[in-house]
Structures are given as C-alpha cells and as structure tokens.
Length: 403
Image (cartoon, rainbow, N blue to C red; front, side, top):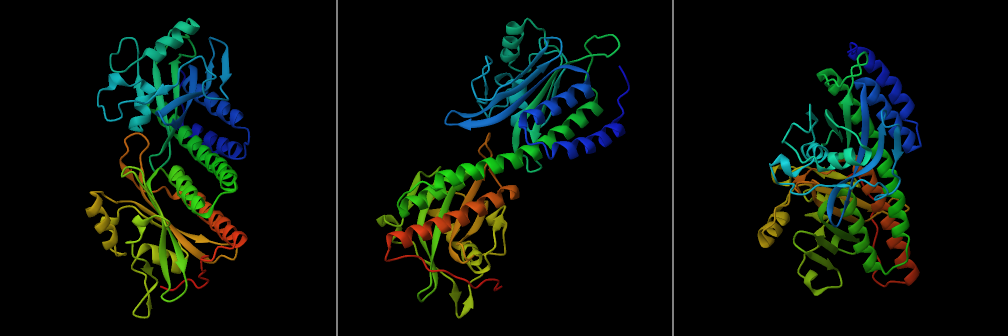
C-alpha cells in the first residue's frame, strides 16, 4: 500500500476546513467528507449515519452511502427513505457487544471501532451488514466506525468505512493507526460544522413554535418544554421578577421528567414555594443562582452543584431530599425583554446523555440557543400580557452588574 503521509494530510485538512466552513449545501459537505475519507484509506465504501431521537429512543439514520465498486452514491433526505433499516440503539446499559451493531457500539462508546473481518468475528451484531450485502450482492470484510463527536462527548453520528484496498493490487487491506487518527480528525471537523447547523435549524423551529398564539400560562410551559428538549434537561423552572417590595423572583412553572412533575403558578401545589428575595439585609443576594442571574444578567453553567462552593444550594438539597432526587448540573438563564431588562429567570437541571441517561454538564455550545430562546420568550410573554391587559403583569429589572 502507498505510504500515508500524515503531515501532508493535516495541511490538506486545513484547506478542507477553510472550504467546508463556508459550505451551505449539507449534501456537498457530506460528500466531500466521505470522499476525503475514501481517498485517505483507499476504502471501497463509506456511509454517514446521523443520530436522531424520538419516542422510541435514539437511532442512527442513513444520511449518505458511497461505494466505488457498486457505483453507488446515494443520499437520504428524509428518515425512512432508505431501503435499509435505521439502526435502533437498544440496551444502552448492556456490556454485551453482540446486542449492538458496530456503528451503534461506536456511538454508545464514543470511540472508534475497527473490525478486520466482520463475518469471522462474533463481537457484534452484523445483521445490518448482512442485509446490505444481500441487497447489493456485496461482501463486506473490514469495517472502521468513527464517531462524529464533539469535545463535550456529545455524539452526532457515525462515519463507517468498509473494505480498504491496496491501491496497487486491489486486494482488501487494513486500516493503519495513522489513517484512523486522521479520519477521527475529519469526524471532529464534521461534528463542529453539524453542531453549528443544528443550532441554526433549532433556533428557526423554536421561533416558529413559540410564535403560535397561546395563553400566558401555556407560554411558560412551552418555553420550558423547548428549552428542556434542546438541552436534554431532565427538569426546569421559570421564575418571574416582581419589583414591588420586597423585590423577588416568584415561581411560575416547574417541570421534571423523571419525577413526572409539571406545575404552573395557577396550581395550588405551588403555593408553598417561597419567593427568592433579591436583597438580604440591604445587600444584593448573590448567593442563590437564580437571584445572581437576575441581578447580573449572566448565564450561569454549573457542572456539579454539590461540589460548587460559590452558591447556596440549600433549597436544592431540600428538594432532593423531599423527592429522593439528585440535582447535579445547572444552567441558569435570564429572561430579557426588548429593552434588555430582566423580567425573570429560567433554570434547567440535569442535562442527560442521550444513550445512557447519565447526568452530564450542559454544553456551552448550547448556551447561545437557550439564551436566545429565553430572550424571545421574555418578549413574547411581555407582549402577551400587555395585549391581554393582565392585571398582574411582570415587573422589570434594569440594573445589573452588582457583585
């Protein structure tokens, strides 16, 4: 096999990054990435899977397939368009590889998987590979699956390459360590571009859904639903700012998926929830995360509340004890109106890994999306109350930066 020059590739990667960073056609982007992977490894085929999720759980959908010997180059614009069945990711807690396909195991573990001969190995479930081979009269041998993964370990999909060939003899070869390293670099590049595109798409969808007319109380719930969906949060709370003495944040909505809780300010269950005072003994209350967010107008992202010494989490500990819960990661975001005045605070709790459901930190890359959602929601809520003449409309806080 021809010698693979890793240094030359990285210069090539720099040029590729420049060209792909401005590519607006995702199919050209996908094709360029797969072409590059095939040129680097001399592999016969390449498949791009994208991670999707619905009520049935996470799955890998076919996005694009390329295969030289089959003369195949196909994109799948809609889920289910492919004759090949999407890869459902079941048994996420199972350590038995045989329950997973190679691509699914790669996504679950967040690391590359290389199998020299899939038919001689009993490590994985290869029913999907067999279906492909039967459908196209093909023989898959060597497989390399590489996760499309962000630095925060969030998996967006998988690149799978099959049958690397010796460019001189045309026989099936093996993937070298250096080839695997550069394919991982390409996958990381694709992850960055995909994440940016997903955020833009999500922002557009959120604006459409939030623009639909609804009652104020329903807007609170919709805002929480959308924020929790976007961040994979297990729970969320919205506080409303009241300026009449004492200045405070009042609870108006709470949701928690694993506890099956969903309360609004109109329900009697919320009456015992004490407001959060913005001042204590004449000084700004910067000990509570929500009040700090309201006073400073800053987004606060906390990986582990129980190991945090900056804020007072006694209220959280009481909640956890009462409901046998464990709060860990927090994202606290100010609700800012058109004048950039705080009219409330949204708190999200316990971001979860899509596959394992373990609690993870909130991704900093999602903060702009949540911040934009919070601001748009604040303006929508304020306009709704003004239009409908709500007698108990929110107050605003224009002061900021007290620390």
